[in-house]
Length: 542
Image 1 (cartoon, rainbow, N blue to C red):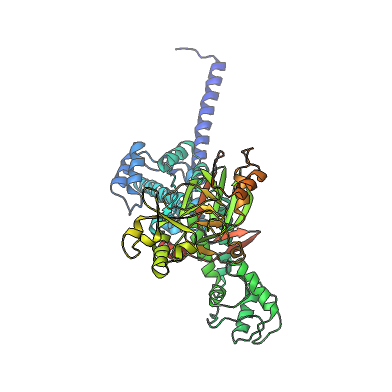
Image 2 (cartoon, helix red, strand yellow):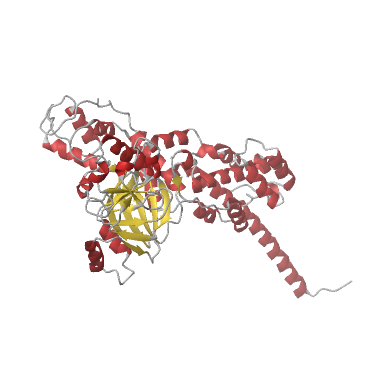
């Protein structure tokens, strides 16, 4: 028999005790407020996981992705960490804050099973593991790219969709037991998106107690000083929305005080702020908090479509709100009013990089305008081209005499129509080019007075910019030879001048109809009627 020194026995006892304490601590950490499953550290086992994947307990939304995920990890359970389980359930419960729906991600099933873990068999826990993975993958897909496909809802959608490896992100979260890190990678970080989430909460609260109101009937336009039987309803509605303090009834008289309140309402809702009561204004006055909440939901979805990284230096055009912002290193450094395409000739949603500027541009008329305006114009009036200083060229670049063209045949459609530089040229004195197949660009316009209007869907698709020359000067600030005076000199010379860009600036033509500004939610008119289509797609669970 070996003799063990008492000091040795004491040391061994301490080591064993430390090991027991360590195992106990690990076990306690893994339970994290949930049950320890009778000493079982995993949420399930590979055999049952495999069975659940190949014969899912319920309809899996992301069957192929779920299968690939578990195949890669040899069907080992993924959600054994209480921190991960807590993180997923908390994220799903907060999905409403993102404008998504808890019940669409097995939410009730996961919540119920997690609250009764000790009563679940190993096979049931394995099925739960698979359901949680499916819930995460669907939620991550919706949170990162949206629930709907923008290409199904737009005539032209050409915004690059950045892919992300949801399986790799989930695997990393499982290995590191860090769900918050996964969430940070899939949730939009756009300021507009985050501010809209505040608006959603505000309008959900408002709509919860909203009982609706009697619609104000449409009718004849009413100007200040006139009388109309709807005035008292309009006064009450402006008071309801906070644009007018409780005042004595004006009866049927449309007073200046009411007109000023209405102008504020019109301004904040992106409609013509002329103080005139028209049917478009009436339709906006009839929109309740529930409709505004839905409008916010629609715009949260849009900002899930848009790329997470718009660049360090970019031009952001909100088509619906007739605004252009220049953003550099996270700060808005310039803002310009714009005019965009009409409903019939919509400005497309797309992104490109600015390549060059053209001062004193001529205007090569695009096919749409050529076929819908120019050729019919010549069919009606033989002086149409001469009156507009438009010349015609064949495919070899040779000028063609308009009197020798058969304007009622196919010949006219195969020619090129170009307007020389000048004061009447619709492109004004500069165009900012980012080559694209839609023939869309930013440009100046001789019709500056149109920018005073609140509704400015006036163009044939391109974006007219107020103070476009100032914007052009800004884009050339990194090129010392193009000082402000030099640009003025080029313009005064009248010659067409091409200047290449050196700095990288992206242009994003986006469309959104709700945002937050100075602590208030702002809305604008849905000029292309995209909101209704998108809301229908969201509610149908597309």
